[in-house]
Image 1 (cartoon, rainbow, N blue to C red):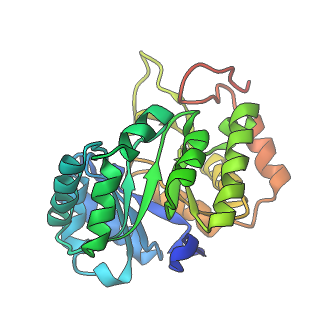
Image 2: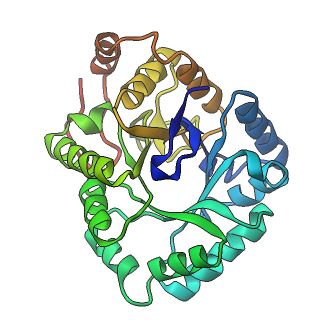
Length: 292
């Protein structure tokens, strides 16, 4: 399994993060199988959130036994200090661990949300306090939507976050405004040694209203191996990118791991040919013209 340094934390993490949103609505047995598959294939970077259904609980039985062998990250979506602090300790209890390597301020995709987080009595104060108490290692920030790169760039001006986590895929990077904002964020992250980690690498488009939903993801994902390979090639080819989160469905995880293990066998031109030829490929964050 390919590994990369997670920013200034010096930890060598697998480039594919086990996106534990996939465990939110599965049985413990299904969760155990998926986690064991990850570990057997060298995945040592696990990323979860307090609001991913039962995901933290599903991680607990196995993760608590191998805590020192993995990089463990969770998130809080709370905005007030008191509620965030309670949620941080609840997450530790649910996962049966004493600490996490990374606590992320969740779903901060606009300046308005960032203002709430960094205000007096906001969640950032809770995270800093928890770090001082030794229950979290570092503090990061995550965001969805087209404003996430610009928002995270501003966040890095306000506080030295260790990581950012935001969307990136071939279609989104083809949008000029998004590309410019993402490149500016990458440049600043390099200066500050901030780990850039991404989500939605294999997202194709929003589900159609009458479409049969074969996966637990809130968007339609790519599920053909060749396309997944091209998506993974695209994101992992970014210089300075620490890694990407797997999609939120346990049935897609083995295909994503397979794509990572083949990374380097596909060149840029081939990946672009595959991704450019897809009908209906678009952003999942609002109306844009799709690639047809």
